[in-house]
Amino acid sequence: MLRGKHILLGVTGSIAAYKAAILIRTLVREGAEVRVVMTPLAKEFITPLTLATLSRHPILVDFFDPEDGRWNSHVSLGEWADAYVIAPATANTLAKMACGIADNLLLTTYLSARCPVFVSPAMDLDMYAHPATRANLDKLRGMKVTVIEPGEGELASGLVGKGRMAEPEEIAEAVGTWFRNQKKKNLHGRRLMVTAGPTREAIDPVRYISNHSSGKMGYALAEELAARGAEVYLVTGPTNLPVGKGIHRIDTVSAQEMYEKACEIFPQTDGAVMCAAVADYTPAEVSDRKIKKEDGSWSLELRPTHDIAAELGRIKENRLLVGFALETDHERLNARSKLERKRFDFIVLNSLRDAGAGFGVDTNKITILERDGSCTDYPLKSKREAAGDIADKIEKYLS
Ligand code: PMT
Image 1 (spheres, rainbow, N blue to C red):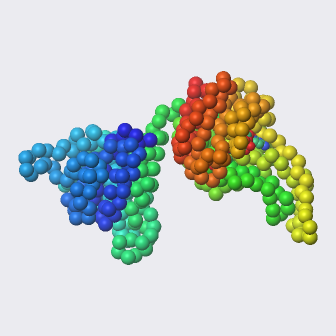
Image 2 (cartoon, rainbow, N blue to C red):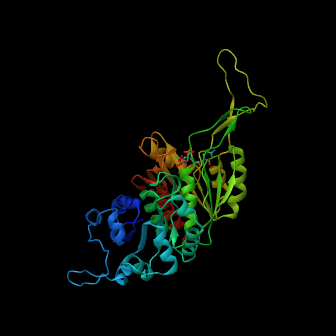
Image 3 (cartoon, rainbow, N blue to C red):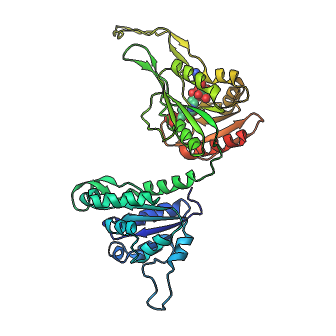
């Protein structure tokens, strides 16, 4: 999301200024061009030479160059930037920003910036908790400045609490998410259902059959579709994941429950993405008491569950139906057969043979197979980025 973006990094005088070096590397690695403006005090904490070397641009501190009188124009810096990230942001700088004080280049640039502004506070826990700082942060939020919350942990003072500057990866992620959310809301007015996570099939009150799905892929899809303006219904099996604002979450446990909820919601939507790892079999009988251990082996009779996707394929009419195929062998052949059998419009294949793909991990490597015979391979990406590729395809089908 940061490829080609101009990021202006403002560094203020905090012990956390050393993290600015790592932040520059992270932003540059993600394809951004970075320029740095520092407050005079920030130079005491990290040298301009370090930051200039990493950003590959001279560092700006003063209003003009004392040697030749050349101006560092805060207006053109503000215009150059696609985002202005002030990290670390001290209590002093936050207070000045909240009041419109402009006594250094970093602050004058803030006042002239037309781009989104992010601040990553870094200070001692008592300074962070002080009502004056809280009020300044609230004021800045009210001015549409994004506050990247500090973390909790050991602080430079030796005290432990909230005030540690967010990690550089978190800051880069927050900026990337902001840009991602600015994508046109092409799915505005669409209602989409996503199934996600595993199901649990009870054997008795203490045991169940399930699988390794964490829900990460399905939740990433729900969030991506919602970010593009869709009204999203997330029919989820049991997971530990929080759900983004504005997404309707429908909790289910068993395949039967997921089937009932999905069949109820699907007719009210424009389409569904079937990302859940639904159990294909469930115990024929559920014991209402804990089954006692006995000597020797034990057999459990299983009966098939409803195939939710196949049922939605049967009733879909002109709704979009997107499937997933999780395979371990003969991947494309199996995926194509599911595409046909379940009447998907397209199917997203992920294989457990690919490192970094499938269950539990934060990444996925997908291939999209379509009914016209086409097949597109995507490289290994974060699940959120993979969700972006699937959402692009959904937009194409719905347009
Ligand atoms: O949750 P994560 O840890 O992030 O992992 C993501 C994932 C690996 C679970 C996900 O990317 C994925 O592949 N989901 C589909 C898993 C699956 O059950 O695949 P399948 O090939 O067995 O099923 C084919 C399709 O039919 C799927 O769309 C599935 O949701 C659907 N199905 C299957 C059985 C059933 N009873 N009802 C269904 O709707």
